View 1: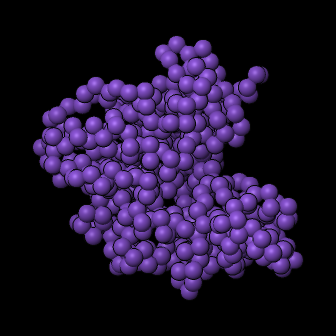
View 2 (view 1 turned 120 degrees about the vertical axis):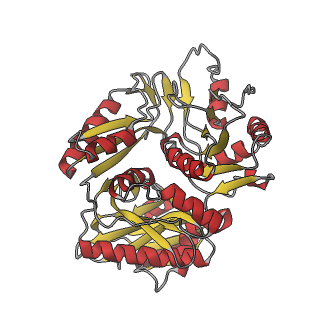
View 3 (view 1 turned 60 degrees about the vertical axis):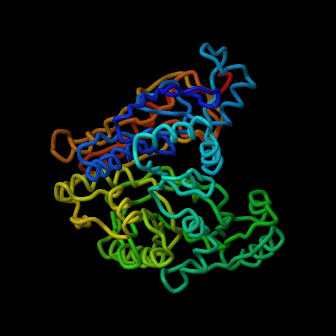
Length: 474
């Protein structure tokens, strides 16, 4: 089918009516998860080819991916304003990150997307939409025969709320001492009263925050007033605990009794609360990992009783004395999901269901599929680390690293002993782009037999990425 309309920044879609399609709507950095969804659906539609169409907000120089639609109204408006919305731009095109709600809203009302769904449904009974995160602004599932492969949107929103988590998880997991308040005046009064009691700092978070946005470790009242200004918001105020370990547990909920634990990884956190990557296996002790899994299973059962079905994660910290504290639920897929798929694929018996298949069965059937098994040991001795290179100031790209689609093969080769170590640089935006603050420029994944080799690969990959950018006017 032909793609028309200035609201589509890029398309290489080739629609075949003989193929069964599903849609992926989300960031390009999660594109490879769809291969596991494709394999899941192929098991259920044996004899028919399954493919996916990816609708993404990432503005790149070029795309080494099939069946892509790019929708980014913020970038489009900037290009129009600066006269770069053409085939021969006179200035760098803009690549910027937009919020999940803004992107989902734009996709849901996009005429090209609606026409695409109508066309696909002429040749198949339903169309599934695979999401990284279930958001209220995604309303395409209100259309007949459109089905979301993910958690219920209302339930996911409820449990992504830090205030709800703090209230409902009392007595279930070890929470950090804290309190809830509303408005800036009460926030200032509360943090001031805790300042002497908690000399290491006070962590303040809005009800919804992620990757360091709308939350901060504060050590002065001036930092609180500068960061938090919404007088209508509720805030969670907790004691900041100095620590070196930030473990995260990835899991799947099928019902109120069945919770699958994918594994434990260590997050890399900078500036107190900004996530930039992960490492596996975790350096936590076997006993600590057992506790982390127990707590996560308890959270999963709470989610299951509420009707949540699908992938989620829980973040924790471990203080200098070895005490575990719960930080938050991520009621969505999280940053370790793709790499855990690759890890499970190498460590579990051949043919075992992967995470997207577990989620599919959880959402559609309230159960896990036959043959479901958790990873007990890292028998293939796979170590990996990730680094998300996010731009913190307005920059211009002056170099290009080809988009590498072979992360899965890298895990396979290290597991099989064909490689001792390797790293891949993924989803680099490309050259001649103006990149706005908050945008992911690229991602590095390093795989090896030990953490030192993994860190070496991450360091080299980040070094290559830095060579592709310069400050404006430099």
